[in-house]
Image (cartoon, helix red, strand yellow):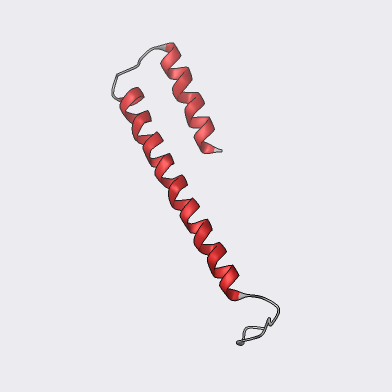
Length: 67
């Protein structure tokens, strides 16, 4: 099974291309999450927005990003 041509009906190029696509999506997702976390720190930890509503929004953002 692990030898070359062990799965002759499988196109390894297709698997490689799909892995590259998943890798690109992962990098895009990571970039968005990093930007979100950066903004969260600036807004909520930097004192831009404070108080009860800020705490609720920060908590909701934290729960959403943890999913």
